[in-house]
Length: 239
Image (cartoon, rainbow, N blue to C red; front, side, top):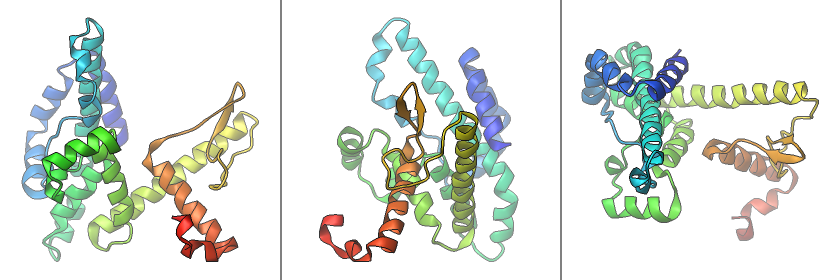
């Protein structure tokens, strides 16, 4: 339901740029609660920040701004709908754990790659360096890494992180398997193979990106290494 609502509003925004503004007005109470209890802030999309030069290009600039707005619509609607869906869980957890609301806010921001770098102690200078040299979308990357790290924590954030990552991995694996079978191809679930989770189109291998795929591939490779050559795990060259 959360994904469907966010995706629907995302595409509506391409046709009507007022969709996000009207949604935020209609969901004002929920957004205020998110900010006050969960410390969830509305941040501009970092995906668009690197291409602001397009603003000055006729036609292209308008399309780029609409893309940015549509992307932000997906994130804001997704965060809000997830908060509304899970606030009951947080309220119950808060009876015994006063950090439950903040845990929910952190989980939601990590899930949508909208974490606040400043609250993690990342200085403005470091944020600029990260965006310039190391990662096109450092908040998204950091959010995904935090999501995986939270899988090993207790409390509300740990439970929801485990549930979300397992659903993500399981859902993609099932879709990939049946998609490959429908195309008459054999799925590749070997994380040590360069074609891991890829499929062939016109003789060319294509596949998903994202930090989650890289993490799955890395963890799978380490698991295979631990099984077949455990001594390599302690060798410096491996790292």
